[in-house]
Image 1 (cartoon, rainbow, N blue to C red):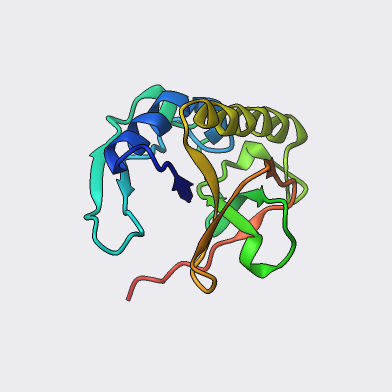
Image 2: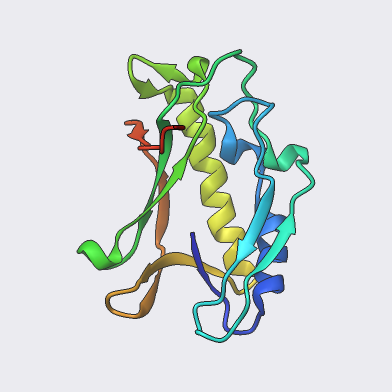
Length: 164
């Protein structure tokens, strides 16, 4: 994920993210799955990456109680900007979809609605702290802020490396 906050350092961006994240953002996954750490890497070419453990609290955990996840399947958050084209599109892949969050090969509609609302609140909450969520184009060397975040009904495929 890419963020822009001209008045904050990497630690300030991590703090803002922690202030606005919610458990509903991970509504597709099990309570035993967590975001363990945030790593902020400034793209200015001179800053160092900063890693911060989340503590595996409730806001960083899923809410599903099924016993199984579907391997290589992810919920997909579309990052929309005001421009069209490859350099202005973004996606966030959210792994570990629980079986009970999937209906006929798609993300369950009720699960999707709750997640979508949570991601919208996340986007607007960050904006109030002066942090823009968006798309960084490495080809154009520019950042474009997101207009909206949409959790897709269609699930995405993650091509993971297989153990040897």
